Image (tube, rainbow, N blue to C red; front, side, top):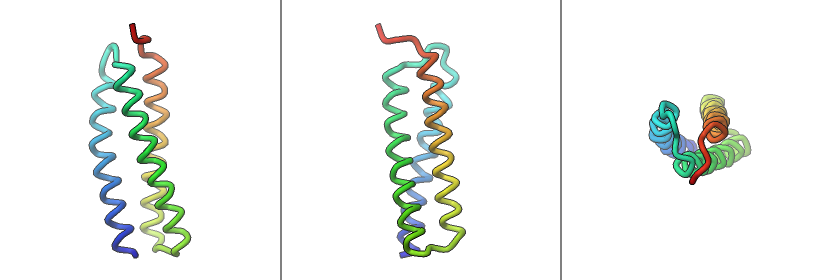
Length: 96
């Protein structure tokens, strides 16, 4: 089971690496696209939910602390990304 946890964590980290680049690009934009921000927020939310489910399963299965700590950290990262996207959406112009 530990190997499976590691595989899922790697997939979630790879997802974060891809999403982080998109968030940075939209953050630098003077007029970020609301649709793009919303879609990105949906993806980040889905990754956060999956990370939360993984963490709960890890805790239930008594996974090593190093794995649960890594999942908890990634959960925080996704939460921070959601807050950042919400802030970007708040300053983005409404679609016309």
